[in-house]
Each structure stands twice: as structure tokens, then as C-alpha cells.
Length: 197
Image 1: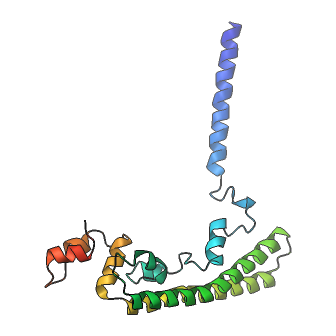
Image 2 (image 1 turned 30 degrees about the vertical axis):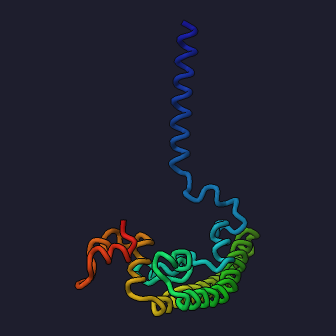
Image 3 (image 1 turned 120 degrees about the vertical axis):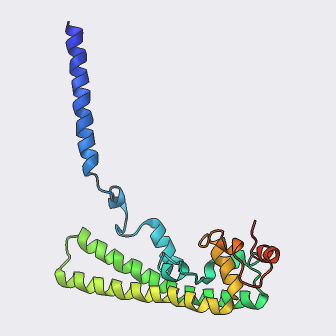
């Protein structure tokens, strides 16, 4: 009888612990774990992207609307048949973009660090918050302009066929490019030029 009571007590205790754990997990924030970051609003990957002048998703409006940027073009130069002249122009554009993006990325990291520290030290004021947010918005806007304007310039270096190949290789157009050649194109040659399987 005593064993049954002990077992019943253990079962009830485990059940109550399960309910408590479920309630706790229901209240867990999606940000749990991020409180350990040095700059709470930036992940280590975010910081690395900004320091290296990478896109950080700022050029999606161009990239996902069929306007390539230079950073992915060089690795696929053979598949989209870039000429030596095109490669030189694309590399020059890429270096110019990085030269502008890296200092702005570092500036943005520093501003986010200041924002974080003011909250961490509990020294933030409304005036300081407004000032920092304006600086962050301005820097982000400048950085986004650098990336988007580079995407705006890149297609001028490419042919329409190369742009179509780029978008297919990046996975943006699926099989449509392979299955629907423009009017007047031979299907076999079209598939060959577009590296269609």
C-alpha cells in the first residue's frame, strides 16, 4: 500500500513538473540566449557581414527582382560566360562597393554598440536615444544605397542572357528559363547556353 502511495505521489509530482515546464516554455522569448551577445541587436554573423562589406540583406529589393550584384558573379563567371573585360569591370565595381560599405558597416556597428551600452549602463535618455536612432537610420540608409546602387550599375555590364543565367543559377527563376526560350531561339542551343540539365 505504501509503495502505491509513493508511486502515485511520484506520478503526480512528475505531472505537475511537466505542466510547470510547459508553462515556462510558453513564456520563453524568441530572443532567449541573445542577451549574451556583446551587442544585443547584432549577431556575430551580422557583425562579420558589416565589417567585410557584405550585403547583409540590404540589396534584396534589387537581387530578388532580377538585378544581379557583383559579389556572386565572379564565382559563376564560367557558367555565365563573362568576358575578360566584363570580369575587370565587375571586380572594379565590387572593390568600389566594398570601399564604401566597409567604413559604413563599421560605423553602424559602433552606433549599435553605443545604443546597447547606454541601455546596459542605464544611462539612456530620450534625447540620446533620438540622436542615436537618427544616426543609425542615416548610416543604414547610406549603406543600403551603396549596395542597391551597385546592383543598379551591375546589369549594365551584362547581357540579358547572362542576367537570365545568373537568376536561374541563383534559384530565382526555376525551370522557366530552360523550358521557355525567347522567340527565335533554338531550344537545344538555348538549353546549352543556359547550362540547363
